[in-house]
Length: 129
Image 1 (spheres, rainbow, N blue to C red):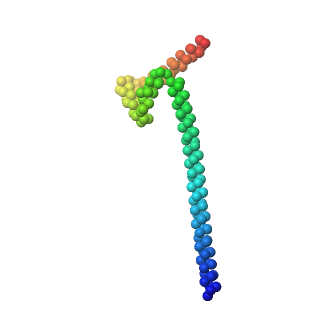
Image 2 (cartoon, rainbow, N blue to C red; image 1 turned 30 degrees about the horizontal axis):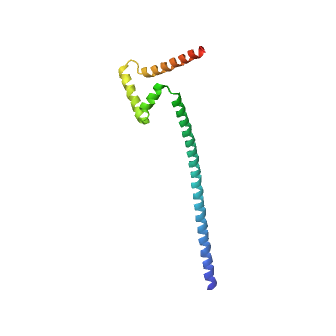
Image 3 (cartoon, rainbow, N blue to C red; image 1 turned 135 degrees about the horizontal axis):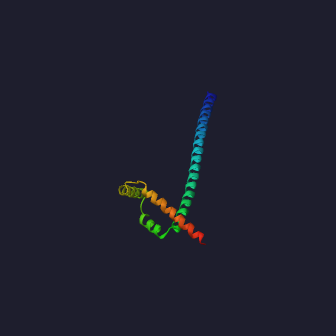
């Protein structure tokens, strides 16, 4: 009878060990999955951080190259959110459409022409050097 109890306990211990080994393997796999996701998130964060730094440097360069008029506009509109600025732009376009019913693209045409004029002025200055 003593050997039967020992054998039974041995089988129970083996079954318990097998169960624990299986749980350990499952939990280890979960840990590896979580670690892999954490590593992916860290890479994403690093990429986003690098992109943010790049955008900040571009913004700083744009501010340094801005004209006095552009700096004044930045001061005026700098505290607005993107949504607020888009709303103001939509309002301005609506007013322009009402004023210039004949050509709905008058603002875009004006802006494009303004850029062309600036380029030509820049080219003329470079030609006289």
